[in-house]
Image 1 (cartoon, helix red, strand yellow):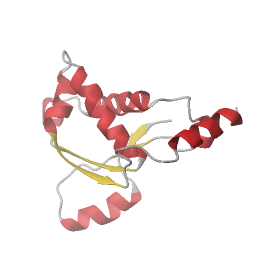
Image 2 (tube, helix red, strand yellow):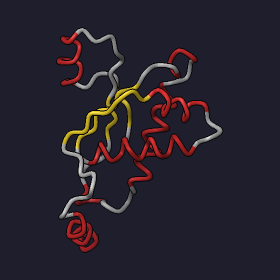
Image 3 (cartoon, rainbow, N blue to C red):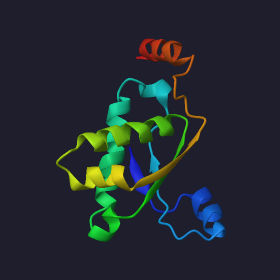
Length: 129
């Protein structure tokens, strides 16, 4: 299940000490790839993130808030895919706003060029079904 939560522990505990005036949210996705790796594509996860952002960016003020994404590992790929999805929503104010209001990224351990174990992991997952 994917969702945005308002108070992830490390973000809540450490970033506010820096004096940031920010609304901090986390997008959670199922990382148990061994159990169901091919059930959801990167596209699906990106669309889930865009839908979650639409749910929390409703008012004109919320739609204009700057966004800084932090993505770790596969989460960074989801962030990139969400921006592709939002950019493709030409008739959607919220989708355009997500792209326009994105001010920066922090990518931590993101396999931008893929991972050398991706193919073996997919094969292992297929045999597990």
